Length: 304
Image (cartoon, rainbow, N blue to C red; front, side):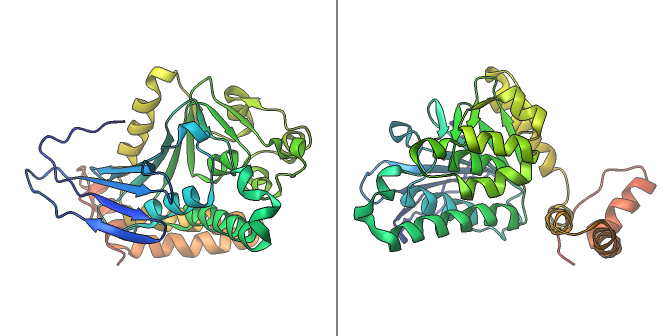
């Protein structure tokens, strides 16, 4: 989505492979800040991902529709760079991952998984993908997938790895690797943690896609909205997150994923400790005080 540049600060960055090539200084026009980042692929001068940040919301768009936004090694690196850049900046509150074209992502680029690329390259692809998926849940800000089309294999894995997913009715989700002799074992990690086991296994064993409404029913996505409202609804969710304390959300997100891997007793033991820790935060104290005084809280977003 194009963002207005009027009254904005614009910064452009370009990376090719691992190397940052240029950084243009910001031009201050007003107190509204927009940062524009572009990550270039290794061969194609067109950026594989386009990254814009405004008012605490970073929008990353997969930008290779001709290749069905395949998660090639370069695309994975590009997306990882966009997600992790300035991740500790308190101005960043939420990340949205969207895509150009009718396919959100078709998963790994199968051309890179042929024998001529070799075992070491294949290992790097899957290790890079795993690091990307785990980093989405490890970073301190929520990540929202905005899906308006097909998400298959590692593309479905990407959606399942995000904290929130909003999709249009035309979206579909599948793990069809079994049909080309490559079982979707790594996508199954995220899928199996997002939907009931029998739903995940049917998707994995048959490769058949499920609709957006079935994905909602089984918990793969958060909500389904009309295509014309998709961008607005996703942005509304992001803005609501921006109105909360970054430090409180970061603590809550980390605790949620940690306790989900524990048994019931350990989960309650951990979260009880975290609630006490939360109350000791400056923003925890501010929130309680604001409620008592019937006013809006003024967040510091401090980790103290």
